[in-house]
Each structure stands twice: as C-alpha cells, then as structure tokens.
Amino acid sequence: LPNLLLEKVPAPFRSPRGDWIGLSGRARVLSYTTTRLRESDLPRSIFELADPRWKGRIGLPPTNASFQAFVTAMRVRVGDKRTLVWLKGLVANQAKYYAKNTPTVKAIADGEIDVGLVNHYYLHRFLRKEGRKFPVRNYYFPNGDIGALVNVSGAGILKSSRKAGLAERFLGFALSETGQEVFVRGNHEYPVAKGFRVDPALGLRNLRSIRTPIMDL
Image (cartoon, rainbow, N blue to C red):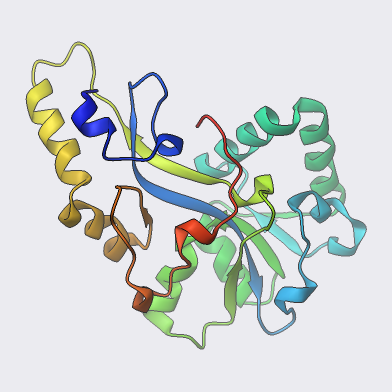
C-alpha cells in the first residue's frame, strides 16, 4: 500500500510490511449481567475464567471468526500450552456455546449465563435498540491482559488487481472522516484513522484508555 494510506493509521493497526491496513477497531470484552454482578466481581485476567467459580456461567461463540482470531492471538502471546490449559478450563467449567456474538449477549440478558466473550460493539447494538435499561455492560480487562485485545477489520489490494487506483481511493475514503463515521455510527466500532475521535454521546469507551496488548496483528 502507498505511504499516503499507511500514514493515516497508527503503527499498531497496520501491517509492518505495508501490505494491509486497519479500517476500524474491534475490542474484545467480557460482557456481563448487571443484575447479578458488579464490575468489582469480575476477574482481572481472562485466564481467571478457568477458575471453578465460573462454572456454568460463561458463554462464547467458538465457531465465530473473531473468537478464533482471539485464540490465535492468545497462542502468539502466551504459547500453545497455556492457551490449551485455558481452553480446557472453559470446557471443564461447562461454558455454553452460541452460534454468534449477538445470541451470546442476548443469553446474558436472558439470564442463561453471567458473562460472555465477545467483541465490544454487539452490546451497543442492543443499547441502541433497547436503551440503558438493557441489563448487560462491557468489561475491559486491565493491565494489557490478552483479554483486552483490540483487533481490526482491515483491507489490502491484490497485486493482480487491474483497478488498484480505484481500490486506493476506496481505502482512502474508508479512512476519511466520513468513512470512519460509517464504522462508528453505523456499527459502534472504533475509528483507527489518526486524528479521529469518538463522540462521547455514543457511549463508547475511549480507545486510548483500553490497555490492549501490543501485538503484530
């Protein structure tokens, strides 16, 4: 990709080789019930979810691409052995499986589970529709825990493309103020373009305040 595009996005959210670029950010969170839990009740690390006290209380979408990408990041961060121990811990805790992120969040609201591992913006879709009375909130793991990973939706341009110029224009639009507004207001994702800030009225936590682990995405 040309430097003109790459320079629009901070280094953590683009390829160090310059062959892809992030267009929006997606934070991993622990969504939790507000009727049975307070934030102070929640674990400080995602690895604590393997503790027996969470047995029968966890939900996740194991076939979802975002969950699988997260597990891959965990493998890169802490190794296969520790990741496998954690996954087996979730199985031992009888984690409940859902097809996607949306039904996972709904299951929390319905009282089927207490917490769920999802991307941050699924809760905001419910809040937009049902308001602040919706009994679920997002928790961001602190201290650079892998559970607070911020991943991206990204794009590159095929070397075989006959319309690379149009593709560059499209990526430039996606990183413009108008394009970033589409991601933020349309789907409650985080903007990654430099200089773009989220309106606090949208209820999103500031991306800079998330202690995400620094990784080569």
